[in-house]
Image (cartoon, rainbow, N blue to C red; front, side, top):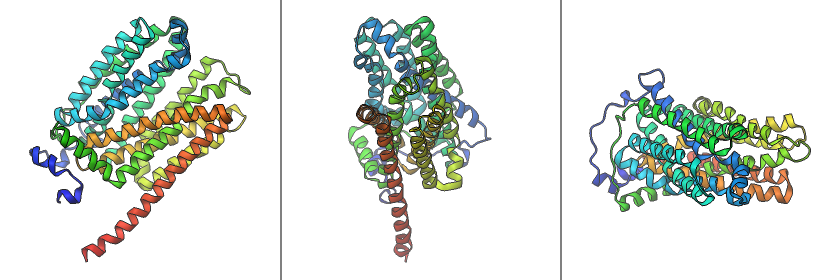
Length: 428
């Protein structure tokens, strides 16, 4: 198949020799040798990434109190980390194309956990923000490289399940980065709390490096800016990839808005829950662990678009249910929102890896950039809507985002039907 028909970059092909690779049958598959080690290794990488990324989110009041700063200033300890990741995910993906996925992921984790052990000793809020920005930039080497590694080393039929397990590790890490820090800080302060998360991340990083199988299907690419920009341009010209990027951003808009505002919702009337209990609400992330890890079975039964419809419907149902004045119904709504989000994220991110015919790390990096842009938009717009119209305003923002997911998926289905009708005519 020619580069024109695959969307591959002819420039990349011209400068990158294609070595002989093992047979596709040698790729990892569930039940086969190395698959469990690989899955567990990347699960731990996901845990470490999100535990570090969100380790200060539950500690903002304590950080504000120690440094004498407002909440808006303390929140930069989270924004700097996520912003650093969003800014550096594409350059780090380019490094992984040249030096290998496992090498970049190992180096990224090593730098991130090293910085994590320095965070508890930050002498000022400015130093803390800088350390967190460096940590986020280092962590940028994980998401895109991990999905590219899986796309190359795992058989296509098992790819959604494998990426789902990595996303499940994200959910566990995101949960632990908030819940553990909150309870430890209650007894020993925020510095000890982030130190504990740092030690957990060190253990995850060491186990990751020992367990992850050496890549067998990686083919080195070029670091030349012209080649990189050409690859990015190819991905952005692909209609399916553009739709998947938008879906990831919209799902994260819902999730970011809900979990930014839910603390205000539950500490206010009519619930009036104490802060410690509100922090434990993040245990709902465990639902995301399950839904992400089962996304492969959903796609197998319903197809990719069917799975996205189900994820969107589940998320919308949870948003509507959360409008109730009953605490039980609100919690059930959060369960549905979390399950729908993580399932949709796993399906969309795995589809990106399967769709990209070249430059998979860049394709995944663009998805991650869209994903974190969605998080920022959701957090900001969701909070503004809450202050203007209460929880119903935040829910309204979420429902608009879900409607966007459904609309894009419908348009994708129509485009697929049109393409299917054209193929027989072109062959004739």
